[in-house]
Structure formats: C-alpha cells, structure tokens
Image 1 (cartoon, rainbow, N blue to C red):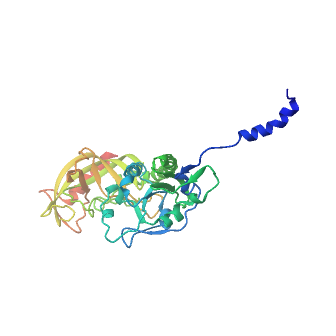
Image 2 (image 1 turned 180 degrees about the vertical axis):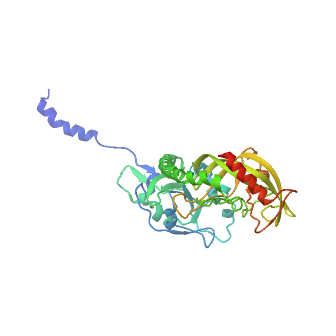
Image 3 (image 1 turned 30 degrees about the horizontal axis):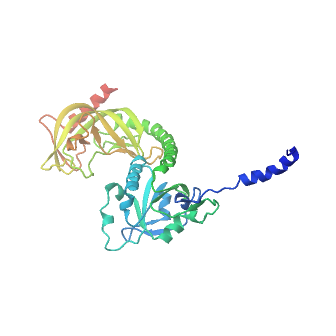
Length: 365
C-alpha cells in the first residue's frame, strides 16, 4: 500500500498526463480577419467609376460596416440580405462593399444593383489586397488548436478612427450587437446635442412665429424666417399668407429641428397663367381665414449667432400625408409686391390684409 509521500510525489505526474490536450485543430474564418483594436492600414480601391474610389480616408466619415464579398455574389445573397437589414436598422452608420475581383470595363451588373446598395461605398480588390488590409488574423498563430482560414463573405465594423470594432465571417448578423452598442452611444450623443439645439432654438421660433414681417416672412429681431417651398423641385399649386403662429412642440431632427406650429393664415394664393405659384408673375389672392396645425422642419444652427433658422415649407397635418399630391404642400407666401403682381378681390388691398394681420396678432396675444 503506497504511503502519503509516494502519493504526493506521483501527483504532478498524474496531473501532467491528464493535461495532454488532444483537441483537433479547428479552421476559423472569423479569426482570419483583423481582430478588434487593429488599425486598418492605408488602402485605395477603385470604384465602379474612374472618379469613385473607396480608400481609407472614407472611414473618417463615420463608423463603417465593410462587407468583403467573393467574385460571384450569388452564394452570398443571404448574407447581403442580412446586410440590407442592418443598413435599414442602422442608418446613422456607413456601409461599404469590397468585391474580390478586378472591375472590367464590360461589367454592367454592378450598375443595376438593389436600391439600398446604390448608396453604399463600393470598391474592387484582389485577394492579396484584401488580406493585407482586412485579414491580419491570418498571421496570428497563438492558438495552436485554431487555424485562421481566409474565406468570403466576411464582415468588419471599423470605427471612424480606422480601428476594427468587430468581425464576422459568413454573415454580418453577429455584428448586430456591436452596432447596437455603437447606436446606443450615438443616440445618447445626438439626444444630448439635440436637447441643447432645442433649448437654443425654441426662443427664436416662439418669437419668430409671432413677429415675422408679413412681406418677407422673416422676424426683425430674431434669426428666423419662413422660406416657403419656392426654389424646390415640386410644383406648388397654391400658397397661404400666414398671419401669426404658436409653437406647439419642438424636437431635434438631425439635422435641424422638427416643429408642430399652429398657424393662422389670412388668404390663399393661386398662380395666374402658370401651374406653379412660385413661378407666376401674377397671383390671385382669395381672403380666407384658416387655423391649421403645420408640421415644419427648421434648418440652421441654433448655437451660431450668424445662423438663421429657416423653415422651407409647412405640411398641413389635416391632409392625408401619405398621398403623393401637391395639395398637402403649401408655400407660405409673403405680401411682397417687389417681383410679382397681386390680383385682389374688389375692396381688398395689401394694406387691408396687413391691417387684418395686425388685428389678429393683437387678439392672439
């Protein structure tokens, strides 16, 4: 029977024998990609046009999910569908696709892509360039039981500083957690910034909707103006002459501010000899009193002393906003007679309309 000393002496040998690891070597495509924390080296890949390129400087524009796809993308369609889902879920981030091939002049398929893919960065590179840029993990031999294997499609999340934040092979789905974390930080930052913009923009809008000049629609003592839709691409069939307004709600929009304004108008305006009130040299004015809720977007930097908050148009919230009709878009029209003639009903003049506005403002207070 062995004594205690012999047992103690034999213990290290038993432990050593038990620690022998016979695990097989596992091939790992994700491990081949550059690990989190790796700084992406300089690169410059040609795009689908000679003037379009995807290079490292583009990463500075924001956090980017880079998809590395094989020459024939047919087998990668499920992964690209998932990429589409992520692009819709995380519109605040950038997306890029690097095709593992050289672009030939005869290629046209890359010009007829799904609409969502038209807005992403695209580049073309061979295996050696892709590996040198995005697959630093191939040089990592620290894990004897895991062999990095280069495979496509593969995906990386890269920060605006050019460092890898996450990696996945086969599907971008595992990167959703990384993107969720980035979105939380982005939302927190934007919400804080938005709260500051709302606080600084609110006084100008509250005062501006009550004191704007009826001719220019700009406030005399605050950085505020109602631009109207003139200058846009849509045809504006009618306009309204605003008298006074009241700010109901205000939220940050990124960029700009989104407001709901209760606006009282004193007349409708229609073009004469044109279908667009903005292009008409003569407009017909129909006095009519309306009180309507408008959804307005104000653009400008509330924190800058030389920046004016401008609202290009007002959307009548009582009209079906889903319908694609010009009836839901109204230019807010000033009583400025400098560049056009006003065709007014008998007994109505620009002066009487101004007097009506002054009377409404006095009663509004």
